[in-house]
Length: 461
Image 1 (cartoon, rainbow, N blue to C red):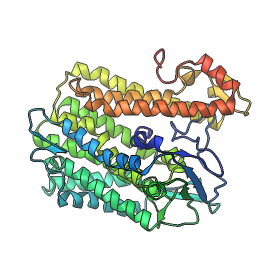
Image 2: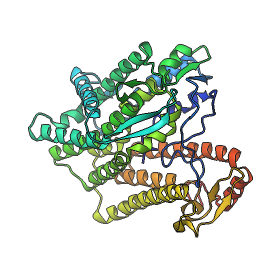
Image 3: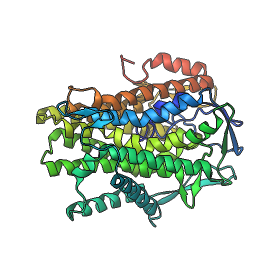
Image 4: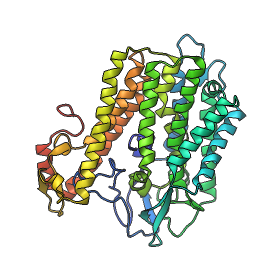
């Protein structure tokens, strides 16, 4: 359950590049949802013929690249500031009395990052193989994100009960936390740029236009840099991004307890988001086949997005409810819960059907499903979940995100920005997938689209 998490920030810089390689066009997709190039069979997202050098073509210049990097942090601070009560005095880039920089916040972000580095070495969790490295060996990844998350939460609760941590103070420093995360991601990215990590398994990325130095810094110059056993891309995506998002939610919950303002609406949003995050951490291996993970280098924009966009933007509805409480009746919560459960079931069951059919199309469980035979030798499902819409897993994701925005009410569009961005992103992803499938399956895909005319929402889109 990853597609609207790790790639939130991708919507901001996806148009930056048109990537072509010596070995293939980048048409693979994300995890159980986003790696799906056709409903019956999946591309594995790996490159078994890695050439070691990836040629990237970009039509963007230095000015536009710089604007994207600068506006990402500024826009986030302005959105967080917009969540605050309109009666409070406002100043540029932050409300009056709330600093946008302090060294304590730098220490907090740095401590969290160092802790996650240490927890990466926990002697627990599964070691699994991922994509094929350029040395002809599959890269190995240690998947103990769930253990790291639980220990981080436990440590936070211990500090809170001991009186060392005051959650409200963390929330009051939200702007300085964002700028501290921006600074640390900048330093981290500069280190990768100035001292690139060269390993036999990692492909080197080159660019061919006048913005080459900035492109290497912003978009990255290495596919799979590693520091010891730590895969840098896996670390920032899972440990910094998703666990950071979960810790913000837990901190907001503790803040509500301190303020004695634990409303039903706030609890619903936090519970929904933590279920979403836990589901991903339980199935952490799903990140290894994502397009971002297998096909794209790691640079400043990815690191910045994982440090600030995932933790702070994803938790925007929770922050909004702390600033502008919205009390809902129990009866109003029932349909919201049903919507979330419906989205979760659609997401989970459609992926299970897709993955099961991929593993064994002759399984009796799929005997009643209608299929179309493709010239590529694959079978396309045209019944079951994939006879409802062409991308039911995306539909489930959108419903879940919409469900955790609804408790915020309708006084502002701000808490709905994550789901709006998610919908737009998944719409773009669906278009990419369908272009790839049309090239691969031709008339079979056209027939599938005729029989299942809707992409995401039945009778709507």
